[in-house]
Length: 160
Image (cartoon, one colour):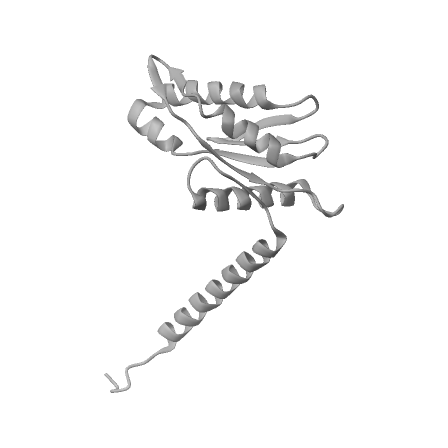
């Protein structure tokens, strides 16, 4: 599973308008479709997010490289030339018990790791990274609860 997010798409909508953004999304979908192999399935998830399910699962980094290369050429929309890049997260099904939602969530997490590197990159999902991220979320939640609990039960020691 590949999860694609268009980098800085909001800027296109905000600066050029939604009609340009909508037309650009159609062109982006066409470009993604041109990179798919027989048996691969692409879908727009909403907004500027797309997913690709690889039929055979062979060499997802090669597919991601092909997609990144396809976005090196600018788009031409309503007389404007637009440079667009995508960030891609890749998740492989390693357990037969993984659901489609888990696979998509993992690919989404990898996409955010790709965005953290900059624009126009891909990252592979690593289960160890996910465990670390989940632990960090749990710890942050516990710290918030502790701070809230401490703040709400404190009293003024001067008796005011």
